Every structure is written in structure tokens, then in C-alpha cells.
Length: 98
Image (tube, rainbow, N blue to C red; front, side, top):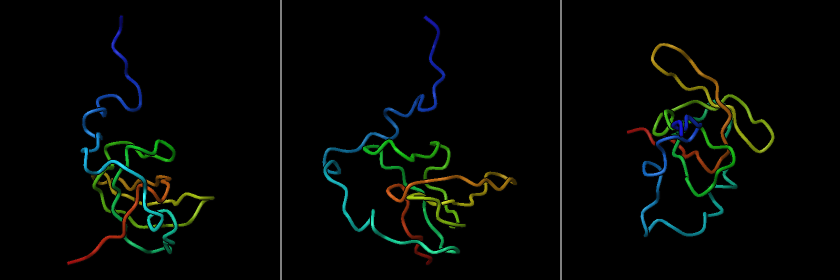
């Protein structure tokens, strides 16, 4: 049987939560409103599959461009290229400088 080359290939162990981290998602992460220009860190929550970005963006810092429905458009640099990706707020956290 040929090896799968799906979108979430090789992420089962990488994105698996530890036993103490399992549980319900806090409402503050869902209801937090981001404004255009805010810096955010992309941290994938593996328990929520909707609006999940590719694993190459996990841990990257991006800038919010606009809101699109329930999701946000985030500008992320990958090497020299600037990528625009659409992410749900469950996978975003505010970037704390310093």
C-alpha cells in the first residue's frame, strides 16, 4: 500500500497534547478580539481541527491583517516570502514582546 501524503502527515505525535493539557478550551481564547496590526503567535491546538494551519507555521509570529468570518487573516514570513494564511482564534495567542 502506498504511503499517505496527506495534509496532516507526520503530525500525530508532534501535535499530541500531554495528559495534563487535555480538557476543555477556555472561553477567553475563543472570545478574544484581535485588531489589525496585532502581533500573534500561532500555536496549534490539536483538539480542534477546524481552521488549523499547516504545521510549518506552528510557533511562528505573524501580524493580523483582517477578520474573515470567525477567522483571521494573518501575515507570516516564511524565509523571504510573505504568506497570508487564514486561522481560527483557537490557534492564536497574543505575542508578548520582551
